[in-house]
Amino acid sequence: MKNILVVGGGGREHAIIMKLAESTHVGKIYCTPGNGGISKYAECFNVSATDIEGVVKLAKRLNPDMVVVAPDDPLVLGMVDALQSEGFMTFGPKKDAAIIEGSKVFSKELMKKYNIPTAFYEVFTDSEKAIAYLKEQNSYPAVIKADGLALGKGVIIAQNEEEAVSAVHEMIDDLKFGKSSARIVIEEFLTGPEVSVLSFTDGKTVVPMISSMDHKRAYDNDEGLNTGGMGTVSPNPYYTEEIARECMEKIFIPTIKAMNAEGRTFEGCLYFGLMLTPKGPKVIEYNCRFGDPETQVVLPMLDSDLYEIFEAVYNHTLDQLDIKWHSGACACVVMASGGYPLSYPKGLEISGLDEKGQTENCFVYHAGTKLSDDGKFLTNGGRVLGVTARAENLQSALDTAYQGVSEISFENVHYRKDIGQRALKALE
Ligand code: AMP
Ligand code: GLY
Image (cartoon, rainbow, N blue to C red; front, side, top):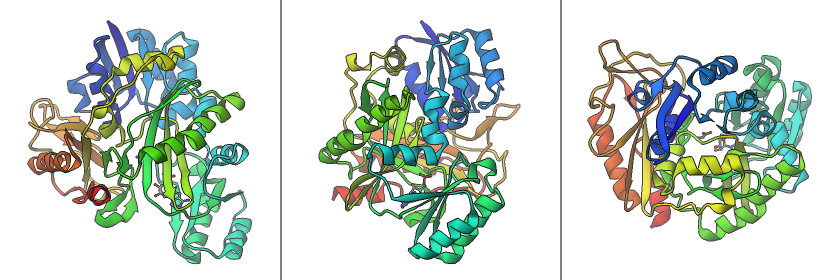
């Protein structure tokens, strides 16, 4: 049996761990740092996910058969390289490939060079020049993006010149996101339904997973601030077979080839954030990892052994697998702390969960929870829980997930009541 160490501590990692636990090959699962809910299924350690030296040390102590690095920061910082140089089998891209998420300037230049459809853009390091460009374009909304990682908050959709100018000053002059915003991308505003497509790739073969739809804004009807994601459904009804074929041909394969041509072979999960514009599908962003909370609806739909897939990616034998998916649909509703994505309290007691942190009919992926000394689940983050259900169709998956949500509570809990409504309309 194979023992596995998963690096990370959110709902995505909880979903990865639960899928790995189903594998007939997998023995013990470790997680660092994990969280309250994860600790019921995996042995957790308190080494931070960005502490490369600490994770390598932990891996040397535990000697797992595989280390899965799930979050963006350690991937971009080169944790996989560090683990591989100590002889560990890993899942996740190396630093030189993770740059596809780590630098928006890199990814935009890659797409331009290899003719991969994306929004038109310009790069700036000088705020005066950026503002002059915005004034000359005089086209709003304008999309302003920090070059580097910014906890999912580095994209500003400015509705007018005033908002655009202040975003530029905050990013370049005030370094709102530190070094990450010293360089910015200003790009064309695209419209159309958004689709998330995660894929497995070993650098030779790319296997798209089932599609999903995120709900990024904090409030119903897509109002309020952008968040890490307030809920997801899978599959995404806008992503038809015809569009999937077009994306394979014009986006997925060209991206894998482009990364190879640059000497930056991508091995791991490559996430395509797509917009289905009137002029065809275009790339909004790449992520070098599983999405959160997309993973919480995609992996429950997987009908194949996740460990075998991870092993095939590492061994470059993905072409030999026939990866299967369940029919039906999956829905995840995120229960967040009141105030998220701005400030919120931590340490509030969560009621309605059983001993394992679950409810009867849903799977509850823990995102930000911890256990109190007397074994109670407490809130410990902005996104707290992802209440998830899989069913024969989207409506029943949503009904079951919302039933689960109604059984759980904590002070000032906030969740969207309209997860999946847009998808249901598209299915009509
Ligand atoms: P990102 O963090 O890059 O996923 O961007 C956050 C959100 O901003 C995306 O999910 C889109 O809804 C929106 N967005 C990003 N780029 C564009 C664009 N060029 N046009 C319209 N919306 C965009
Ligand atoms: N849910 C979007 C992301 O993981 O970036």
